[in-house]
Amino acid sequence: MIGRVVDRIIAAQTRWAKPFGDWLHGLMAAIFGRMLPVRDFLAGTWLGHPLHALVTDVPIGALTLVIILDVLGQAVAADVALLVGVLAMLAAALAGYADYSTTDGRARVRATVHSTIMLVALVIYVVSLGIRATGPANRTVPIVLSIGAYVILAGGAFVGGDVVFALGNMVDRHAWRSSGTTWQRLDVTEIAEGTLVKASAGGQALVLIRTGATIQAMDEQCAHAGGR
Figure 1: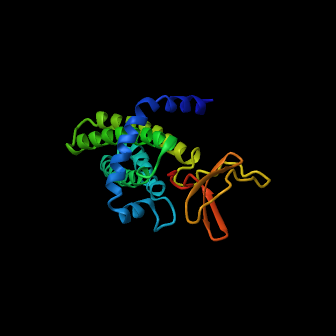
Figure 2 (figure 1 turned 60 degrees about the vertical axis):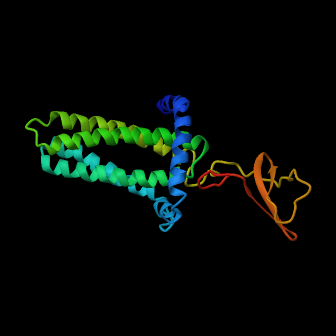
Figure 3 (figure 1 turned 30 degrees about the horizontal axis):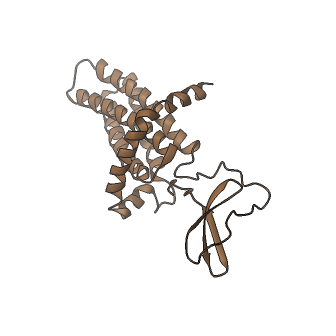
């Protein structure tokens, strides 16, 4: 029940997240489109695994440690952990925006909400870190800020998980589609040599191409990032 309520709250953000996401996506696509090797590196192509999902564990672990160390009165250790967490958040954001540059549709809207929440948390963490750097006698304010930022961080992580586990973005967008148990006829009668042709079979939108007597078919939507 809680999940459905949260899902409705997230869906309600579409009014601002879609136009803002379209603009931000255009910006990220322009930036990363000019340096494809960098984008591929940040996407984890060399690793065979999305890099963003891997890197996000670092800030979450470090920022969890901040709260524990603050409670235990280990001020210096907490401050160091916060610095590590902030730097790791920046690294995770960089990898995330590389993925974002090739994300579209509903996943882009959700990813926009996710990144916005994370940026809010990051700003609060930076403010907390700045106050801590002054060596205040009373650390109540920076500690409260860190705890509040952690709650926001958890919310952002929830939305980020939804982008992956509910929508399959950067993993497999076709994972929740039924393949059926019988062969389906294509709704096309003529396929020109070497020309991409759109078709459908059993409600699935496909792209076909003919090379000689061989016809190859694939889903019209990229299973990885969602581009068409």
